[in-house]
Amino acid sequence: MPAGRYEMESSLRASFFGDILLCRDRITLERVVVKSADLYLALHQTSRSQELVQENVQLEVEVLNHVRALGGHPNVINMHSYFVVNGVLHVVLDYCEGGDLLDAYVQPPGTADKSGNSNCNRDDNNQKEGTVVVRGAQVIHTQSPEDENKEDRNGLFLNGADGFNRLHESVAHKYLVDVLSGLRFLHSYGIAHRDVSLENILMRDGCAVITDFGLCVQDASFSLSSSDSSTASEFRCEEMVGKNYYMAPEIVAHERYDPRRADIWSTGIAFFILLTSSPPFERADPSDPGFRYVAKCGIKAVFTAWGLDQEVSEEMQDLLGRMLCVDPEERITMDETWQHPVLQRKGDEVVIHQPSTMKISVN
Image (cartoon, rainbow, N blue to C red; front, side):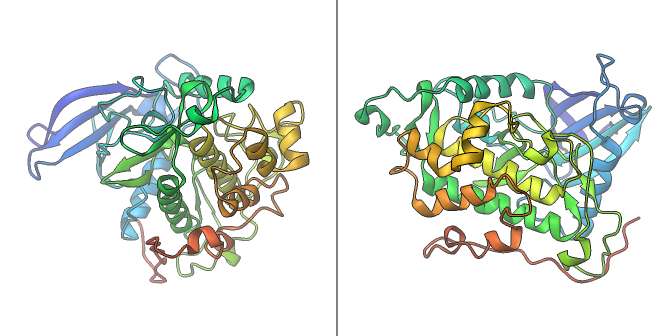
């Protein structure tokens, strides 16, 4: 790290290929996060524990540099710069003081990380997933009606399964708009995230920010001179990537898939968890009884079965039901989500960041 530019304040955690540091920029005086990656390990996609991983650091930097060249987006993590010193890549990113949505809103009271140190790629994501999925597999709502409707002192939470928090719809709605706005921007430029999860949605200045692009993909046929999504209608992938509880059924089934539609599925799962405190099933596979129930009856039936059909609006249930349509060809598209009543609610500030049509050359 160049001496004199970034002063390390603390080490946040380890990543697959290096460390994640909280630093202060001596020039701007702002806090930033610096992700370091051993280039030899990163280029060979081998973690520090010598395990093969799918994260592609080179593509992540390329995509974030592309996003920056396009002018950036308030709901996509901003990369300030990157540089290499002694075979180690350093990527300088915005510091998101609010942490991630899983820590902030789903963990049991008193267990969330209060430091806000939830930036970027993390080796503990699988452990956090395990915490969620146990509740998803075994969830039985035994609270009394009084407990179910008891709010925390800040007015943000309701009690969910097994004492975990579930978020008020009004707050979840704001974050959903943020995430869909960020994804719409990415998709319009031929970029799919492929790892949307509560762990990869950070909070900065009250807004949700999509981060961790290690599993993203770019449409090779996409033209920067046009943001017409029809030009990328054959955008397809084959790799099985993502977290088990968020992976779309077509990915689990090893089918060729449209990663943009898979992003919509993953977003639906993330916000179902925010609104209920639990995933609807462990894995979108016919061997999972929870998934079979959703495939047969729809996600709205889960809200009803869990006694939450009166707690979450009919419109929100409908939108999540369409986002979690098992058949990807029948699943709601990104453009259709912006026509849905949930995103057209009066009184909610919904700012759609339209992509520029200017052709930009990215070196």
